[in-house]
Length: 108
Image (cartoon, rainbow, N blue to C red; front, top):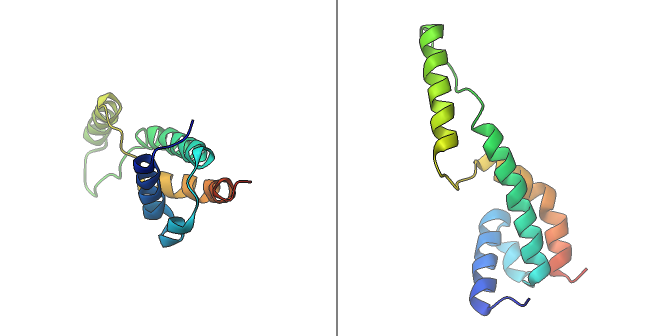
């Protein structure tokens, strides 16, 4: 399946926000799209786990109140239909996938 010019430009714009201006020179093809999809899937898994991490407790806060509020916050984050990724997750996933995406852009 070939990508349309608009899809290629959208993908190039996204990759440039993740990898910087060097991505503007990459050839965008279906293989690059597939590698980008895999990268985002990994980032999503990381972000789903990050939703479960308790937030820091403020000094002087009652531990029971903190735990109750934190559990409620975790549940609300999981219930929310949120497609956002944590920056640390996208950064780590992007770093791990950069070579594969760049090689796909070169047709390798």
